[in-house]
Length: 133
Image 1 (cartoon, helix red, strand yellow):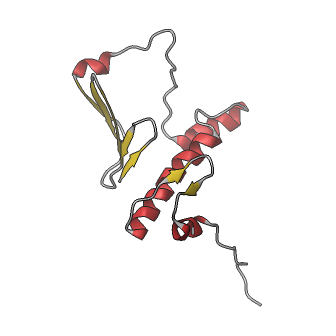
Image 2 (image 1 turned 90 degrees about the horizontal axis):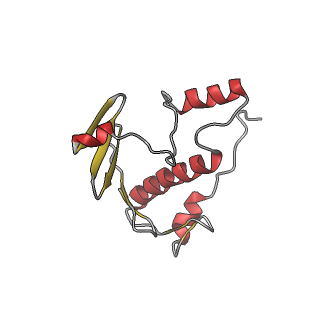
Image 3 (image 1 turned 120 degrees about the vertical axis):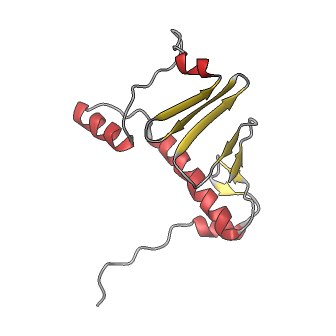
């Protein structure tokens, strides 16, 4: 899947193996889960953050991050809004695959532009009771 954001950023998603790759004008860095990191040029692997850079502590996964935040009565590295927006991308990608067409998303209204069928598919389904009478 290819996502294109209003600011020109492209996000390519593949469903083969878990990995994350960032590409920029000076090269790329890729994390192949769980613990392999490669880069081109390799000097990117020796980069050290500057005084104004945001640095996140390493966590093994989001579940560990959540449990640590609960135990410390603190906050998670990623807040609920970021989690919501991230999962929205996944849901939209799956919906585009299922419908077999491109979708244009409005992140402000949280609606798919010009596609009533796709928007209807985003609506939550009524929950049924786990029992019958």
